[in-house]
Image 1: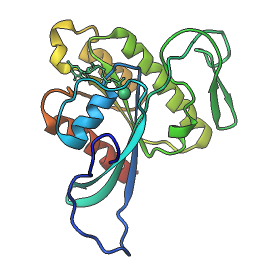
Image 2: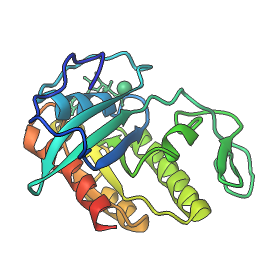
Image 3: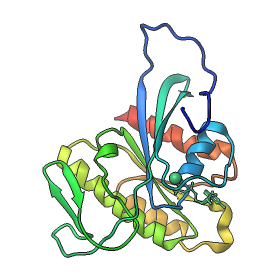
Length: 216
Ligand code: GDP
Ligand code: MG
């Protein structure tokens, strides 16, 4: 963990010769879905309601997952608002050149220049907000990008689809069944969470990502 939250969580002393196994988790999704809120909740157990939407950073936390230590690195991404459209063969304006996914064209929030996390991550959390259908649709594009990347490099990283803002049930626009169905279409796990409610539920999804990486 760095700048945004001060010191990392306390951890036991480890001999320099035995580095912790690492797990790199990138959090993706449209702006406003709650990526930063979930990251901060996981790292500090607190809900902080306002962040700079452009802030992108990577934090580290030593975790015990099933009694085994791991250095969990979390990249809280902040893709710039991007534009979509066009009728290229991949749809949504995405093109693929070798392992490079790039995007060129007009009009919505979604994945921008994604090489930085595609190459880095060992698992992905793709987040939408249950009270925003637009964020759910944005998620599908992220899942498509991840699927294309997995095809291109023949390395399939675990992906977890998260419906965030479960506390906003009364404004729900996306049914749990729709989340489940999208997740199963892309072979992902699916959870609904809230960054402003129960910490253990948020912790659980990050730990699930580690378990999935270990299973590979
Ligand atoms: P990001 O752009 O995906 O990083 O989204 P943020 O984490 O900055 O959150 C966007 C807005 O949604 C902020 O006003 C947050 O306070 C709010 N928010 C995030 N998570 C939750 C949640 O679980 N419940 C509610 N009610 N609001 C949330
Ligand atoms: Mg953010």
